[in-house]
Length: 238
Image 1 (tube, rainbow, N blue to C red):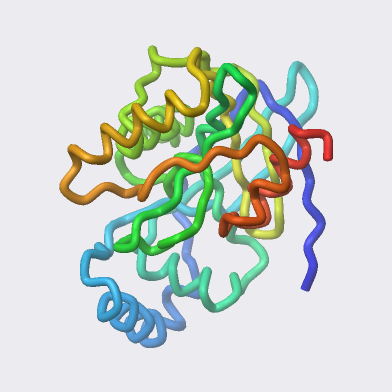
Image 2: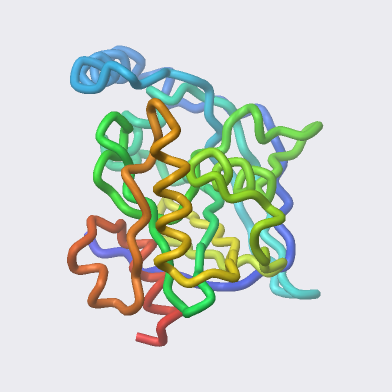
């Protein structure tokens, strides 16, 4: 089934943590457990931690735009089953923040996920499903999530680049990608070399490496999800 993407910009994301009775996780617990057992058998390094999914969302365009969302805690195994079973249920969504890396010479840089990860071989911007480390008080700090995932996956810290204060939101079905543009004052090849050095010093890096994208044709050689292609087409004016 084809899905129509929406793209809009916001100056603020207000994400609140709230209780939510997710009937999918409760009613299909046996299927979730069996599905997770299969995933772990294939990739023993997987860990069933706690993550945050969304259950309500609204967009208000006034005053620079704001995204309001509510998040609830669940198991990573339930999230994986929900994704792989085709996102059953209309209310829940996967809302995550990404660092849309761009070099001084205009190229975008996607990270290819390492073989031991749940999304092995897929290429997208540094990101992660929000988790308990992203909770500050009763809110989900998606800006902090971007900074943390970027640092953990690539070694690039907040002070190394120019973080755009305006978010680009790509809404595609149950996936809501909150893109935080990050421009680095280096050419693409320099960024790749720097990140390669960082990954070489990590015993089990999340990424196999960065992939340079200068135009939409460069995506032909990558396994990039549709929301990444939608965002890049928008940025390249394709």
